Image (cartoon, rainbow, N blue to C red; front, side, top):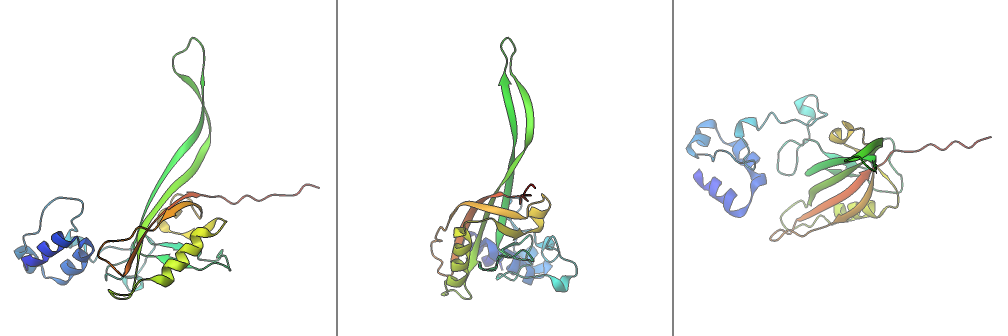
Length: 209
């Protein structure tokens, strides 16, 4: 059983950890002498209780291509505000990072150290979405999903987004600023992506009389 550990470490198959550990009994896991510490290690006791942020019953939970439960997924151009001319795309294997800068005017005054700060407002959220698209088998490139994602990236408009993680911060629309598609060495059925975008809030213009 210890061979699983060396295969995972040697070939960088971290995503297989939840699947392998979830299939083994606790006695088998103890024989494997699991490594302790390290953020990359999946604690096997937590496998099976992971949930999506917006999920109720376990039978309603989605599963990724790896057989693990999907948590904090992202859906682009989905829901009631879906743009008809653009495809809808669900990103299950994804990580999201957000940051925000406040808009503050800092004025230097003669004879005074430092500056006077005048708070203006909260700036846009800067959002980075990293993940991967996967084909159905080891030799199938996800060309359909990649084309759909590329169409969304090139759209000259803000995109509606559904994400429980983003909704916590009241983010419902994003504007893509740049994106990249790095290739993964040794994998034919994987297309990684990284999307940088900013939050957007619709503005309703009222024509005066």
